[in-house]
Amino acid sequence: MQQLSPDTTSKATETWSHPHDNPLRSFMLTNRAALGSLAVFLAMLMIFTIANPAVFTSWTLYASVLTTLPVAIFLTVPLVFIVTVGEIDLSFPATMGCAAWAFALVVQAGYEPMLGFAAALLTGAILGAFVGALVVYANLSSLIATLGMNFVLRGLILIFTEGKSISLASLTDNWVLKVFSSEIYGVPAQIYWAIAFTIFSMFLYTRHRFGVHIHIVGDNPDSASQMGINVNRVRVGAFVFVGIGAAFAGVFSTMINFTWWPTSGDGYLLPVLASVFVGGTPTWGGIGTALGGAIGALTVSFIQTGIVGAGLSGFYVQFFNGLIIILSLLGHRWNQIRYR
Amino acid sequence: MTERLIELRDIRKSYGNVYALGGVSLHVDKGEVVGLLGDNGAGKSTLIKILAGAVRPTDGEILIRDKTVNGWNAARSREAGIETVFQDRALAVQQSIVRNIFMGNEQGNWLGFLDLKHEVAEASRLMREIGFTSKVFTPNSIVGQLSGGERQGVAIARAIYKQADLIILDEPTTALSLTETAKVFHFVRQVRASGRSILFIGHNIHHVYDIADRFVVLDRGKVALQVSRDKVGSAEDLIHFMELVAHPETNAKPAPNTSPKHKKGAA
Image (cartoon, rainbow over all chains, first blue to last red; front, top):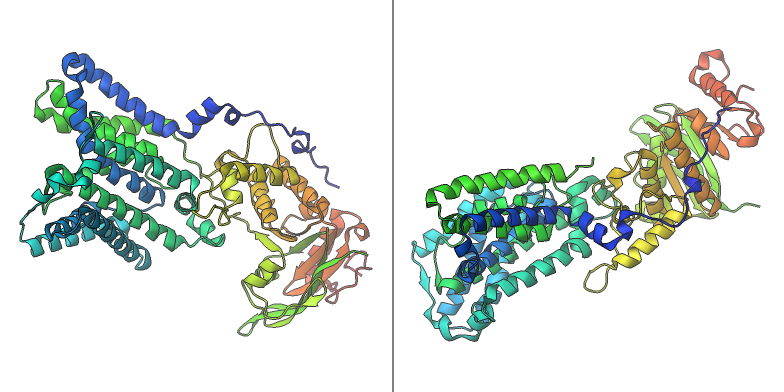
């Protein structure tokens, strides 16, 4: 008869002592990726400050970054969800343009801007659902299909507007602008909303059924459907969330200039995509960090301002952009283990 | 007398002209570990799928706690408290143990937000129940850090959370080392001690012999032997019987549904 080795498990005590018991270590472990991207940002800031102390200790530089950063955050954080679920969405710049267009049309027609805001969110959600359904139910490659949708939607904007922008001068003395796009205690109001959005997304990402399902579907879709999770609905949900984020970004960017441009959102495709990965979300799905995504957006938004502020000419921007992306990817590679 | 949990009577399944199961009768009592043995193609997988409700039997009767269940399907199977832990265990390895235990069953408040503290407490209670405890991991540990046997424990804990009365383990010890197999056996014994039943399917006769209270040997869609453990002298007897079944030219193949009184099949 076969003699079994003794049960090592039965001797295990019922009291656990583990890194997770220490709140600080637990925090460090679970937010390792986000902290890594924060370290990247701080290192970059330090180098800039050493290069040009006068510029980087004055507030004006930061204030200008804080005005445009929220737009990038509204785009980047939902994109973390879609990368985690194992897909990608390259149609968000055009979705942003379309949602902002809806906002501009409603405001131009003389309605309450808040109504325009709602119309923009609805447009973003519907476009997200459409793109998501196209990818998920027609079983298309999300990389190619969403790239195509980006061109289609942008093309529709250009066809209908014939490239003309919409000026929204009536916005200037509206309460909506004061709430969303003024200065509160000397800090651009947008940043408060971006922070609120990031915190909400963090909870959604780790403590809500939706975010938890996003993780599981991105990790192992077969297991997820075996356990009764509607995998397709979760995937479409991620696209809808990207659409809503793009709508926020569109409205906020329109409120900065009081003008909607047909090209609204176009310049965000690559920087935002880079922000997700600089923020510490890996490409393979199943894990990621919403907070890291926001920090990644901060890093990428800061590079351009930072390089010019450090006294280098604009020709250096692209080089340093790429350098920081590659270096932070190398850092995350070392920091994150992929379990299979 | 022991309580009868599930009974199959003369279950048949055919795919066209091919019989996968040609009249299988077996039962599982409460708090019992039944070892299901059989060669490739003997009909083990079909039987599991029928129990899980994924496949409808062509003919036959299924009784849950001595009551016939009509219209057997996946939902009925779940209602009856049958949970299958498949070979691949259906785990998301980059997620924590908690997330895997509650996978698809996350209990949120009305807004859908989860009570993580409550989930961790519930998960550690379930893990303790099956003796799945250790100093090196907690319910928050990532499943990818666990060994093969421990991953089996996560899948079993999940089945327990779903109020399973009968857990079907599909070759849980295949490709596991001795120590890992011992861990799985430890979980199985704890589950049995809690009054639940297990259908343990295996290729390795030694493993099945060590853990099961009763053995059922399937051969080409029929039950070749049903015998309780105390009637079998050793794993070698079982292996001997399996060899006889596998080579019918030795003229020793017994009739289906051999009564448990047979010490060996080679009667």
